[in-house]
Length: 350
Ligand SMILES: *Cc1c(COP(=O)(O)O)cnc(C)c1O
Image (cartoon, rainbow, N blue to C red; front, side, top):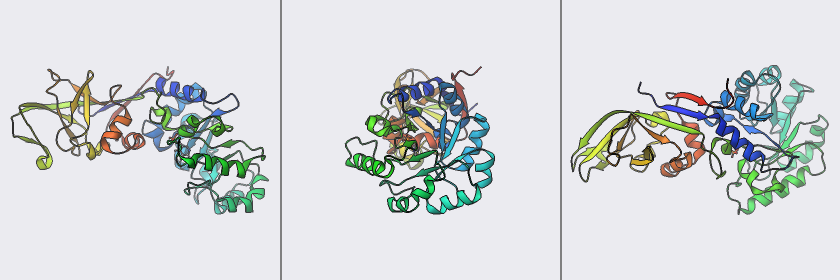
């Protein structure tokens, strides 16, 4: 078999949720963000493991993801949709008991007309300028929305992964100005905000990336291992080049392994000549271009030919790969391709 093997440690995900839950006080509930198929690791398995760990409120980006999640979780846990109530979503929201976070006056109108009495939340924009009602809009329609008893009022921080950014305190100030004294549950913090301190926690936190082992949750346990099988090895002599456009030339005799995965599997082409794979703790540099289905690696430092090499493992986190690729861990995880054989371990699975 020549496909990579992606192993997802559900116990590590549950432990990360518990560790993030422990960062906030007893009056703050910890939710779980499982959008984008659980950050690429499989929303159904991740959400079931988190439900077993104690999570009761889940968040997805769009109603279609909520429908898949409801199937996995069954009735009971709340499922919130960040994108709100779009035209065409009404049946899904109603039949699968989803809670849209309404983002605009248009969405408020649509929801109240199509599903009177159905649960909803309201997202407020406090400075990110991406989703949510502007303060002026909230001033205009807040009373009307509150009369319908929202489940949750939330906003999202733009710079929570930069604790020193003055934007955090400013968004906190605006959020409090818009919601203090209303008496409806409130949520402001994702992973980064959860780590900023108690004044950011309110009634509910919404961690995503920290559950999956990514920055800014530095204490996170690693969650994913990705092993890529070696298809072939060869010795290249000094002056021979490797890969498309001959971007790497052997300075001396080297042993090159060709592994089965490439940018079609989400291993970004920007890892060419900068990234590395690991075998038993030894770093083996990627040499030459990452191609669509294959990566070439200098395994001369190993002294043996392994059956596979790891690109995600305890020696190399998603953030390490992201740094080498010039991106963020979120993009590495959500790019993980469809060709891998995915397998989960732990998670209280029978
Ligand atoms: C993605 C997202 C989250 C989770 O963010 P992380 O940084 O992954 O913890 C929380 N809230 C909203 C609105 C989001 O879009």
